[in-house]
Image (cartoon, rainbow, N blue to C red; front, side, top):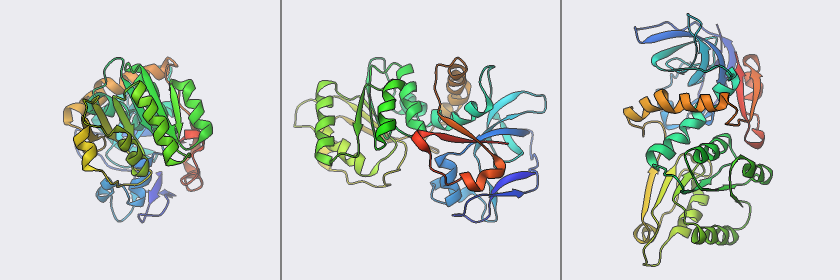
Length: 323
């Protein structure tokens, strides 16, 4: 079968012929793949930079963690892959699949799950979002950030503040439901002043952070209290696009009611994963089928994987490989 294969970590996938995977037990199913999104998770695994990449074979592996495909009986599903999914065939876990509703395309469905997991899981389980809360999304111009705005609004957020470097995309987020947009391209003093003014007027309840690094240090600095009672802030780190480490003052932690946590592979409980597949993803697929969730995608062919792998994502666009 044809597949996108990484022969050495750090190299881009090659369009190559590889043996079809073989089902090993009764919990596994062979699926005919139709569409696979290219995500930062899969790029991180291919490069060896993501913490889960140690599980990948050193002798070559098919990229792709999930996919949209057809089962032998013709059922169209989203599923997590046991084998790599960016291939004509993939082995899936029958317990980690979701039937798709009518009205949603393979490409749109493929683009969503990684972003849904990267936003809904943080909002629902780490931040435990409540109706009427104020949410700050740091690094919202990417595909997952754009999804997070819409999901936060769907979950009842009253006010959504977004940050980002791409000025054009940042302003377009107001059309997706964001209420305030703050540029990360301005100097630190102006950024802090702008965010502090908003926080004083409408205290931030939840922070979803896709950047970490220096932007996180700036945001944490504006939360620092002065000895008076403070609003509880649930800060959830989801990505590290601006750097994997920060300096964090003990004074910040001691002066504010701050809950600091992370959301990602390995941090979710088994019950939370079950809810992702049984409730969260089905709900989000249905919203997209009803045109209540907007996604920004470009469809590409599997044969062009070497050309598109390192291409720049314009305006938070997600590439979806059609198999």
